[in-house]
Image (cartoon, rainbow, N blue to C red; front, side, top):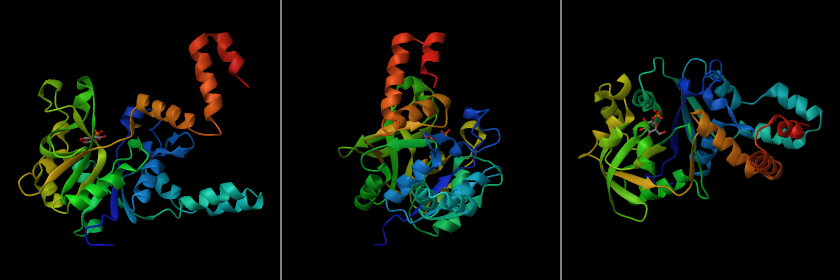
Length: 303
Ligand code: G1P
C-alpha cells in the first residue's frame, strides 16, 4: 500500500430520513431493506469492494440498529446453527466480518459538512472517501474504486457526478467543469442546490467523494448555507485555488433511496436481477401492465 492509497471511508448516517416518513419515524432510513438487505449494506459493500479497510459511521440518536446490524448476533446465530441453516448462518456471520467499523455521533444536526467534520480524528491527516448511504449505484466496477484510480493519477478532491434533468437539478450539488478526460472534469465551480436557471450545468454531485484532509479546516470556516446547514459543497468550493478538484462521471445506474420513488425503483430493479425472485416479479409486473390494478387482477396474484 503506498501513501496515496485511500483506505478509510466515512458514511454519514445521522439524517432523519424525513422524505421516507412515516417509515423512518422509529427506524433508521439506512436500515430499510432494498430487497432483503438494508440500503446501507450496498454502500458498505461498494466501499469494501473498492479496497476500503476501515469505515467510520457518523451516527446520531435513534441509529443504534445500524451498529447492531454490523455486529455479531449471537442468539440468532445459535438458533440458525441449531436448525442446520448453514448458508444463512454464514451470510449473517459475514456481515459482522465485512470491515472494521468505527462510530461517532453527530450530536446536533448541522448539515452534511458538519457530519464530515466529526471524522477529523478518524481520518488523521490522510485523504479519505465519503459515501452517502442514500445513494446506491449499480455498476459493473464499483464507482469508488474507479474514483480511487482517478485519485492516483490526479491527486486532489474527486466528486462523483451524473447528468440530471434540469427540472430536478435544484435537489443537488452541481458542478461547472472543464472536460479533461473521457469521464473526468476539472471542477471550476460548484454550487449546492441551485435554482434551475442558475445551475452551471446538468452535472450533479452524487454521494461519492474523495476528500483531502484540508477539508476539515475548510469546513471549520464554512458558515451555514442552503437550508441553514453547513454544506459540504460550500466547504469543497472554498478549496478552489488551494486544491485541485475533479469530477468523475461514473458509468452505472444511480438510485436515490432516500425518497419514496427512488426507493421503490431500487427495490424493483435489484429484485429483477435476482435469480430467486426476478422471474416471478417480471411476470407479475407484466401482468399488472396488461390487466391494470383491478380487484380481480390482484386477487389472481395472491397466493
Ligand atoms: C447531499 C449533498 C448534495 C449532493 C447529494 C447527493 O444532499 O449536499 O450536494 O448532490 O447529497 O445525494 P442531500 O441529498 O443530503 O440533501
